[in-house]
Length: 188
Image (cartoon, rainbow, N blue to C red):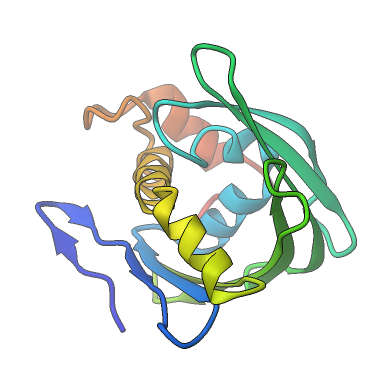
């Protein structure tokens, strides 16, 4: 499986096996594995890319270490909130993150997610496998339009990694410098 570029944008592959309650998301990024992993684990960076463009994000808790927990909220302009929470089972630096995931709107439904970060020699492939309680639960998530949110989030991550977060292709010197100078491994 590979990620391809279409019209200058990297493709996000989202697969749902008809017989299994899973969703597999594969995406490559034009950045080192260290930088991509840090963008997944640093709450100051995560808040800048995770989720659809039309929503803002508030992080209530984000302790990305084995045994840690998280809770964040995506907000509509009208004040509607969508809360998500979980615990980190395993955070293995630059290699993988295993965590639970639950939406406040369906608190009895918890999925297990594993994100694997592959070094492609200056590029990184992230494969995220989510296992839901049932095929019906998985299908409900797909029908909610999660694909658009995932794709927009990854586009925003591309922009963050490239130092341009306005989505217009302009390079922001401040953002690029912030990524280059972070002491936690953002430098390639």
